[in-house]
Length: 180
Image 1 (cartoon, rainbow, N blue to C red):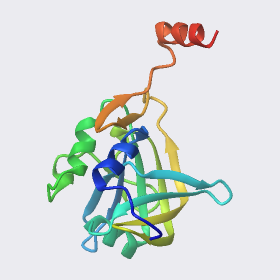
Image 2 (image 1 turned 90 degrees about the vertical axis):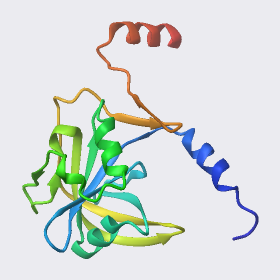
Image 3 (image 1 turned 180 degrees about the vertical axis):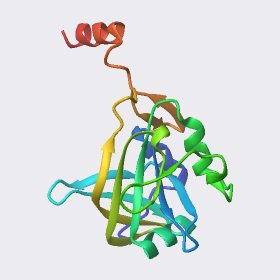
């Protein structure tokens, strides 16, 4: 590295100032059992072809299974699913013992439909080591938006939050007043 880097605490605070959506990345292990982990480092990469990326800790057993299988699902969590996020971020060994899931229609991967506003089923097209994490690039081969969901679960400054509902007339009025 070219120079001194920020200390971990300051870097965490800086990045915590940027709100992000919350996802749970899922796949199947070598034994066919479901695996998943909470991930807030998810973003789109390309529209043509449709690519996205997730960043997972290098020591994650989910990462190893995901790379071996070369398939995963990104479940974009819906509002009020803090418990789901916390479960998949925990050190609990069998996270799926208390999670409701169904096999995806394409590859039978764990889909958290009741907890998600959308999902993208991906095939791995690239893996890049980056510090203590690994960037996994996936080609979206299937997916859907779950229209009945109200909004996304957000994470900001180590707390969960929600996106203001568009049909909340008070919020819309305040936004329009602020915009002039």
